[in-house]
Length: 187
Image (tube, rainbow, N blue to C red; front, side):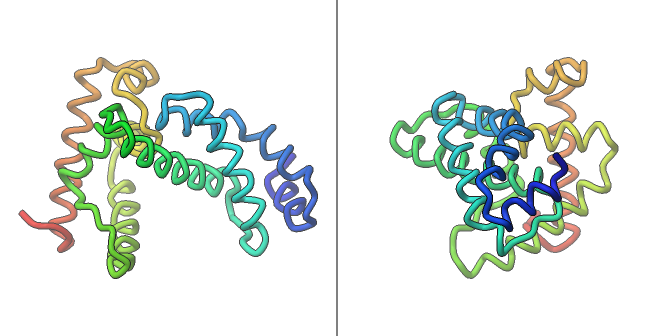
């Protein structure tokens, strides 16, 4: 079933919308959650919560891409659960490592007044990603959006782990330079 048809099911408030979403994107959603949480039952919980969140937000929202809309919801819910679990355990897994790598370049902001700055940063990141060659962009997105391990990325793109690490390091350096040039961050 096409995304537009599934979205119409949400607008018609048909419970078939959730079944169709699960059938089409269940594996995709589970892989996002599993890469962040590394726990199957927690990942399933996040995926199920994401279906409820989509149900409650469509309508009134009409996403242009159901896959991207759903992926963002799953990722955000998984990161929220990860933070909650990490606060309880204070573990340092792959997600913490990924977030620490990015923290070297992008400072975090938790206050409400930084919302606008966050939106500007998102636009800058989108523009920056557009300046990268295809492989660098894929590796960067796999690492920092999907939270894939260096080993997984190396296997997917048939690169050595050291080549992936070097590509990520160089891309972070380019990002730092780009953000400084655009007036975001400091030298």
